[in-house]
Image 1 (cartoon, rainbow, N blue to C red):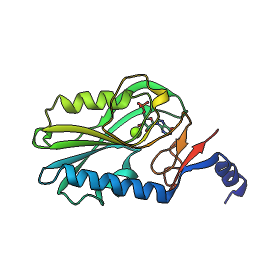
Image 2 (cartoon, rainbow, N blue to C red):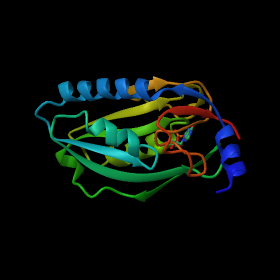
Image 3 (cartoon, rainbow, N blue to C red):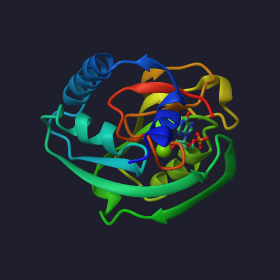
Image 4 (cartoon, rainbow, N blue to C red):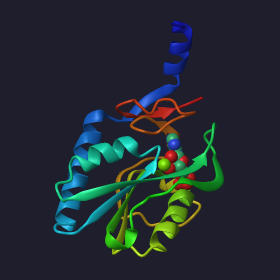
Length: 182
Ligand code: IMP
Ligand code: MG
């Protein structure tokens, strides 16, 4: 094992901005809200891969209303910390959306481009209702005006990793949200 490399890797984590416990409490509360809003309604949680996979897996275990899960993959960030401005749908959902109350589960709303494109696509398939929940919101970076229904945390304009969010595909497995610096 190359310990110099590991040290360099860890030094890029500047500070923890949201702890594991803070995330846990906020996810629990979000689950309770979903349970009260959707009692008796068929829900389809649509996770935008890959960033939201951990948020989705924790959130769905706080949900007691019967729900289905679908995945959509949209890519707009590549190897750097700047948005490419191009959103590609690389994996689509199989379910007939018109039968469900859809809740999009996103990791972070940054420029708003990804959600704007995904929302357009999903809405064109006529879900019974449509809402968006995001773990993080970075409003200072917004380019496309997009209204999120529920955001667990609002963060400043810093690049963050952990709890599903990556830098060059690394750091997704951190149990907290941390500020990252190259
Ligand atoms: P958008 O700019 O709102 O379209 O965000 C696109 C995607 O970029 C998000 O869904 C995240 O996966 C990723 N992203 C945006 N900001 C960050 C960040 O601070 N850290 C890691 N990924 C990010
Ligand atoms: Mg994402």
